[in-house]
Image (cartoon, rainbow, N blue to C red; front, side, top):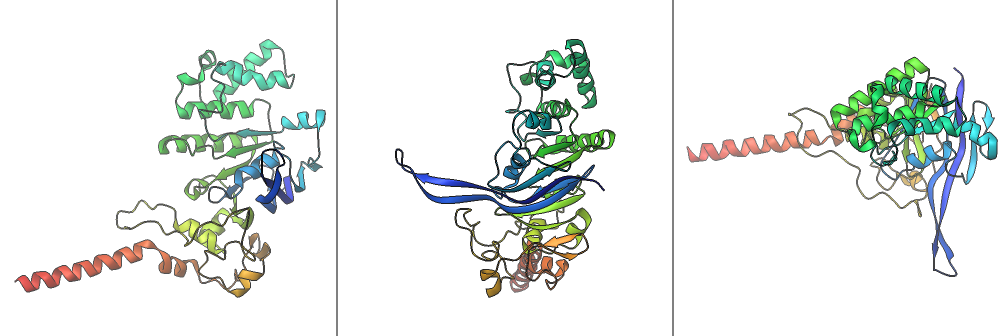
Length: 359
């Protein structure tokens, strides 16, 4: 496979200042802190994790919408980390984004036709007739009628707006599309339609996706590989099947347990890790998950585990990745359903004793 995007040791740190006139730096927010990954041509790599873990910051770094503190970004074999001016403008044609909120990402004062034509004008693509034809083609690609070009964003539903956002991203024929939680603001039934549309477009146009999400149930139907982020670090990378069947980091297992299960026999709340997420201004020493991990030892609290390959194509940043108990045993020890079933059994037993006494 051809590597389309390669990120190495990428970081983004924000200084925290105090004072209005003579502001002084009192700390640093480590939003992204030394991550590395690759994305092949035609592949979907999902970046998942809790809110605030650095997923969207990573997406904006990759697109050069914000400047990295350290690290390198190589796109199609070229280092784009310090690219500026005309070369950076040309790069924009090859890398586009679909934003999370379809209600805020479209200009309410522009018609849909103008919105889709704007990137073509910016990059000097075609004359007016050719651009209008391209607009109609884009609307057809995302399942909308050509006459929608004369309407304004407020006349559309959320799902239709997101289709327009996807069409805008495809206008300049990119190779990479960053999907920044593109379905999280939509109804569940509409989510499925948009996901199916993205997969269909990928097959037809040969697109590569960097898919940002916090919902693993959505990622399961879209991704080829999954990278799990926690507090600015990537803690596990594996193929979709491997990650769901044999996760090798305790945080990944916790995320999997948090997926809602549509089973009326499973009662009780979702199992979440104990404690609070540490501050990115003051991450804990050693493994960043050690304050919430039930497997943590003294080594985890002192020594930061590197992201290493534990089996072919499967990387984990855990000292004990190879010796963790099987995922099934982890589920049995932590699943809320087990506790709920035990409570129901005790309740039935007590009710039986009360009935026997009354009789």
